[in-house]
Amino acid sequence: MSKLWGGRFDGTTHSLMEKLGESVSFDHRLAPWDIEASRAHAKMLAACGIITKEEGSLLDQGLAELAEEVRNGSVQWDSRLEDVHGNIEALLIKKVGDAGKKLHTARSRNDQIATDMRLWTRDQADAIDAALHALQHAILHFAEEHVQVVLPGYTHLQPAQPVLLAHHMLAYFEMFSRDRERFAQLRKRINVMPLGSAALAGTPHPIDRAYTAELLGFEKLSANSMDAVSDRDYLIEFCGCASLIMMHLSRWSEEIILWNSPPFSFISLGDAFTTGSSIMPQKKNPDAAELTRGKAARVFADHQALLVLLKGLPLTYNRDLQEDKEPVFHASDTVQLCLSVFTAMLRTITVRRDVMERAVGDGFMEATDLADYLVYKGVPFREAHHIVGETVRYCIGVGKTLTALSLDEFRRFCPEVEEDVFDALQIETILARRCQPGATAPAQVRVALVEARKRLADI
Ligand code: ARG
Image 1 (cartoon, rainbow, N blue to C red):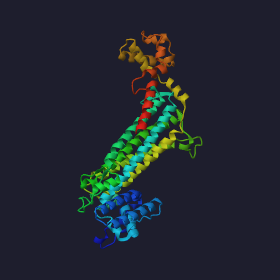
Image 2 (image 1 turned 180 degrees about the horizontal axis):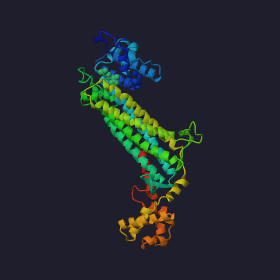
Image 3 (image 1 turned 90 degrees about the horizontal axis):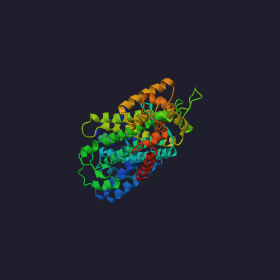
Image 4 (image 1 turned 30 degrees about the vertical axis):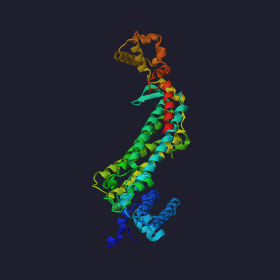
């Protein structure tokens, strides 16, 4: 098997070197993008007179056939040819003969892999955006369906103040909006064409980079050939943005796991995204959420792997860079899978409204509102805070909730309390009064839902 670079060598490559050096076992998935870039390159070479028109169309035809063979899975990848580029070139030469040997004119595998990865990452960014969009739709639908439901909001995982379930869900909507923004910004930095940088210094051939960029849909040309072949910032960013999505999904997973566990019982998950235990017949485990929480760790590791991979590399291309692919592929696949799982899983969740609303009655969640009530009656907030603290302590002692106290009991702690305290401590009153933009009053949440729908339709 002759190597792409065989001319300089007398001896043969050790099989262990081949095993260490091959990447086609994982980079063959870049083949469609590699072929797309090669077709644009060949077209440009012919348009610039660097190869003949006939050679140009032979290359185009051969590459189109190869694209079809890759699609239908009939290509046999050969690890002795190292990578996807070596394999495609060898297959092309087999198909079209000598013209195939001209494809690599004015190009190096260094700018070729940089181009392939940017094309691939651009498509993945779009796919992730679509998956985020679908999840936001599902969240919004869920929030709208349960717009009446109230549950405890927590700080420190202690009951804090009542909130609408729709308000809680819209918090996740916001997180995924930011994730989409990040990918949209990153897409601009991805969409820069390195092709034409050749090995590192550019090429003496009279190529037309702008034409190739136009054919491939790149917005800009790289401004420096040395940076172009060694830059992997966008892959680090890609894994960073993917990590943030996984972090959001992981936090949500934690909540789903808690809410689904018997002591909470706020929700119950459908059969489709749960599994059983091999020993305990009663079990129905929230594995989809647990696995997502677990997979987040590995995506964070992908991000870290790339940072460490790059930190000691001098300019320009170093073979270490071949190791960038598996972490990025893993991060991208995992994020897309987990987003799809959550979109589908959300539809299988049953909300236990009665349990959520019962929980709102526990934990003295009206305490802040009682303090605010005293403030309206002229008590300074710090004093009011203290008075309510004492009142809660009293309630705990006699085993009562705040709303079960009599007017006399309230007045024992604060003579300013009047008959209207009972209305002030109603859950409906508490919610309705949090009516600033971004807060949980039902009227505000309805506005937020309409706004969210509009935002989804716009982008
Ligand atoms: N498979 C290589 C990679 O992914 C392609 C570039 C090879 N360049 C080289 N000079 N050996 O990095």
